[in-house]
Length: 264
Image (cartoon, rainbow, N blue to C red):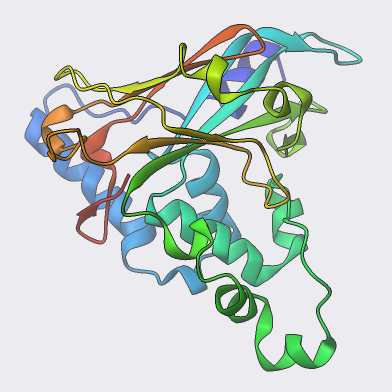
């Protein structure tokens, strides 16, 4: 496989193509139906490996930035892939919960790090299982509870160790993310909309043992009490700097609907 084909197929979600004769309204309806068919009608506890992988790597809640620096590879110099996820969106949180439910095998299969977990006795594992145990023991975890106060985006590196899509593995606690500090990020980090709304970054969490990567917190409400994001805002844009290089991604709001509600 050629490098250009590999990069385009492995990192950048394929564009949906529609016949030129279709109106924008029909196109929007088709996209909405296709998304609903994948996730809306299947409880997350029944999501397949493919469903989980799709949501966490190639869904409307995930955007990819190829930063201007690279990683050393025995055969080729590839740009570093930074995945930005809308961590507080329900489908993203539930995909992570499904990984916990299934265990390390699923995480390894889709190239996602499995979080370090406390020792689990065989009796506890049989009686409660991983997922129930996690939810009961971590009621305030962002994967369990989400956040009514903040929109939280996560940044995580995905590095290539080969030439196929399954050779891309996430690494959450890399030096570039661990070295970031809120005072430096506050000047270069933003979540903005085309309508001109641009709340300040209020919190940054370095990558922890949860394997979720670095976390960027923005308020859901503006200073006057209005919601920061509504469907009128169309394309929220996230910008920051990692390793001195610009990271820019955007999200399409009309596609961020899950179970009939906007999820961000």
